[in-house]
Amino acid sequence: MTKIDRKMIMKTDNLRKLPAISLRLIPYLASKTDLDGRINFSICEIENTGIMSKKVVKEALQYLEKENWIYLADDYSYYSKFNINSQKSRKDYHYINLYNFFTDKKFFSLYKRQLIFLYYILGVKMPGTEHSIAIEHLYNNRTNRENVKLPFFISFEDMLTNLIKLIEAGFFEVRLGKSKLFLNKGTEKIKEKIRIYAGKTKDNKKQRMSLKKENNKIIHIRISRNLVSKDQIVDIYDSSRLSTLLDLKSIAMEYGCSIDVYEEDIFKKIHATKEALYKEFGITGIQLYREAMVDFFEKQTHSFENLMRNGECSNVLKNYYVIPLIEKELKGIVNEVKNECAENKIGLPYVEFDSDYAIKILQKSKSYLSYFIDYAYDDRKIVLDYDMKKNEYRLYDDISKLSREWYLFRNKVDEIYKYEKRAYDNNSDQVLYLAKQGLLTNKSRQMQDISINKQKKVYQKPEDNILFYNWLKE
Image 1 (cartoon, one colour):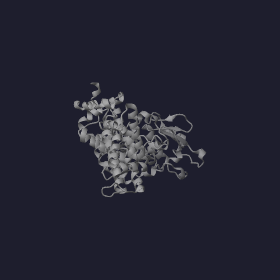
Image 2 (cartoon, rainbow, N blue to C red; image 1 turned 180 degrees about the vertical axis):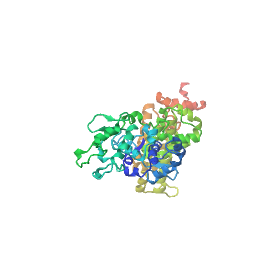
Image 3 (cartoon, rainbow, N blue to C red; image 1 turned 90 degrees about the horizontal axis):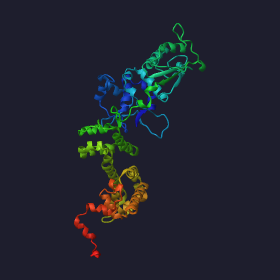
């Protein structure tokens, strides 16, 4: 899932180069960012959110672009440089979730330094856990200059004013020293309590600062736990976000369809198809997904609503639009090997073969074959194997010896033939017949033992039965 890259948020110096309008925009843009980094939004949408005045939206984007947080690609779409796709395999704190409070008016009302302070605490420790720091390290001062963590507060009073604002707005909870009590938005006289703890004198001046660590005044700051609990994380299927489904929404709208009325489970299935493509192919997978989606709407706009309501849209998209694109790529790679690596004589098969170059070209088929083996119906595996043998038998054999992926694919096909023989006593011709009819993975066939003879009855004309006439019974 796309989240905010923690490393980017922790670069305080980079954040300081951005105005408040750009800082407020970061979570919003993150929520609209797809798996490939494309930000699915329009300037009009930002103007309508109330995040900022309409007059400064373009300016906010320009600052983000100037400081390399976003960039404008050749397709005239903005792409994010501050998003990261969360990975279950990673156990480190590498991303920041998108929380509901990022869309709160109180968040939009924060000033620049308050926003940076908030981002700093959000990133320095896991949200909801304490960050312990000496008060003296939170603002510029002569005595302790080398240890300052947030150099944009010019004095104790300046730091205190902004800290209190974040507490009273409900973003921070602060514990002083060894006290077990937290100062929060419901606490009275927050300013007075922090001053006393910090050692402010009656004449409103702080006591002389000591360089000794044991004399530092430690405070413990955390993001308010009620803001970062699991139920406060924005769901990617929430209608206010749908970040990885916004391309579906946009393409559907072009063909007069809406996705606003369907259940979350339906979107999860579609997202799973998209995510599998991204994991296998990266950005190329997202391009394949969008190309398949456009092709789907070109041909099946009329059935979109029924497929969505029945939960079949993701299956149709994958099996009848994505998989054919994968097949096309695989055949294109094989054709490239033939044209670049095999020397032919007129009327004869190739006589010389550049194995080294062929291996290099065949590397491109690795991901395509991996996806095809995992997700294509057995029917399509059988038919692709048949097409390869029919058109390029010798080349197919050589490729299978050079490429582990093609070798595994042929093994998978052999397993299907063996299973059909064992389970249904179908020979290779009968299996191919079923595959061409799309019956190997037919739902009704999976529910009961249907042999090739039973299947043929559906497709045979009455006169075809003459072939099976038994004259011995007369």
